[in-house]
Length: 240
Ligand SMILES: C[S@@+](CC[C@H](N)C(=O)[O-])C[C@H]1O[C@@H](n2cnc3c(N)ncnc32)[C@H](O)[C@@H]1O
Image 1: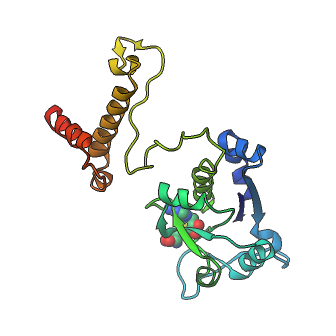
Image 2: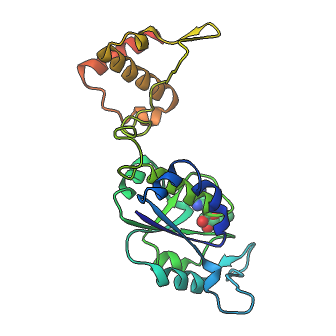
Image 3: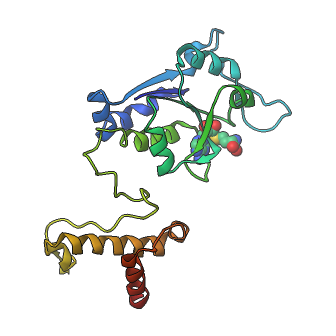
């Protein structure tokens, strides 16, 4: 996958993209990230990329000309996504959708935002990473690259993204590693039993318990109509 990122602050990406999974994906040729400085295409003396808003008010607005020029010089198709707190809320299912693409373009806003004509005539999608306002779209773009990048086939070990939180509207079950007892706290016996079926059932039950306690909105969307899930729900009701 090739991801082109358009930003006024390309240096912000250096740390996050040169560590861990995103770094490995790039080294293995599964992901290529190109950073484009929008300011680089300006031809005026002061390399101006922003201007006062029509109608007055606080803050500056990113001008349309440099954004169109920077993107049109390299864009070769695929989703053209503006990072904005006004976009649809990014989640695991959107990450999965985007991981199917071979090219993605991410545009990072700054200041009060960008000229609306960019939204109307250039971008094809708008994504928000949460209901809060960041200073710029860079951190949001990093979040999208990380969440999408790890879902590109071959980046993670086979199957390791299948059972994670949010993959089926469920939060993941608790994890434990050695030692089996730490400061008197023992791990659940079933995990030492070697009994795969019982371990799978315990994990399913703990996932359901967590999702019900922590994310009633996700819990409401679950299909728990199987015989096993009905039994698990009954047990949880009794325990809680
Ligand atoms: C200070 S914000 C502008 C917010 C804008 N005035 C508004 O109220 O919608 C500057 C830039 O940060 C980015 N940004 C801020 N919050 C974001 C979020 N939750 N998700 C994605 N991008 C965000 C966008 O690119 C935005 O153009």
